[in-house]
Length: 372
Image 1 (tube, rainbow, N blue to C red):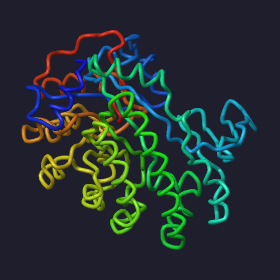
Image 2 (cartoon, one colour):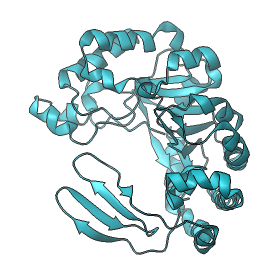
Image 3 (cartoon, rainbow, N blue to C red):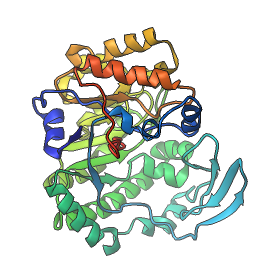
């Protein structure tokens, strides 16, 4: 079902829309399409159109990327992997068989002096707002689309420039540099929001952090309160003035040790809620109620197990106490390699039955990525 923006907000923030929302957030992992094709998947199953997932049309506005001034260039390319230099001067390696994102091999910032040399990468410029995109977004908004704006992560920005280990150390050893980075990012981001708001509404504020692993987050509640909260607050207030109603954070891993700090910093929604890292949406709903909006939470790895195990996972996660809004049901990340096509069919069919949704009917072009 394609949801109107207001239906989506009513489901997340209101009293619900009389039915549950069931999505596929990210789609298949690299390589799964070949596996399913060998198992007899139809073209509509490969596109996920056969599974009749819910979605809302999403349009993105504004550009707050770190604008490096290096000329991107390919340094090495083979059937197995490629290495290229990106606009930040980082050497990026992509393993073609298993990855969709390249990983940095080095970084442009090691010291405060390095940061000062690249501070202009966060400068505001009129080109960060595209008039044509805003006009199209405004028209789509009137037709029911959701207009989303993505800000730089308070942890993700230092990580982009320094790498994870150096970024973690900088929060302790170079607090002035981190503060300067986030202040510069906030200045630019708020200026961009102001120009967008004069042209079209903003419904959703999104921040990508990905700052946690299976054992816990890379940044603790004190650091979030000290550094990320002032940054988030500045941008969230400006986004709310432009119409935003949900502030969503994307982080895999075990984030529950910092949920209270994130909520205090303004975050209202977290996804994808990864069970392999101990994220249990049932327990979190019991603790936070509707104060914490969630998407995902169904264990992707259970799809490679038995039908009974799939049923048990769905019976627990989709139980009646979890329904009635404030939560979008879906896998906690990409559909993993090794997932039998028949298991995925069974998963979708069983979830729809438990949620009281009608049997899936193929709708061409219906699947849309719902990670936002």
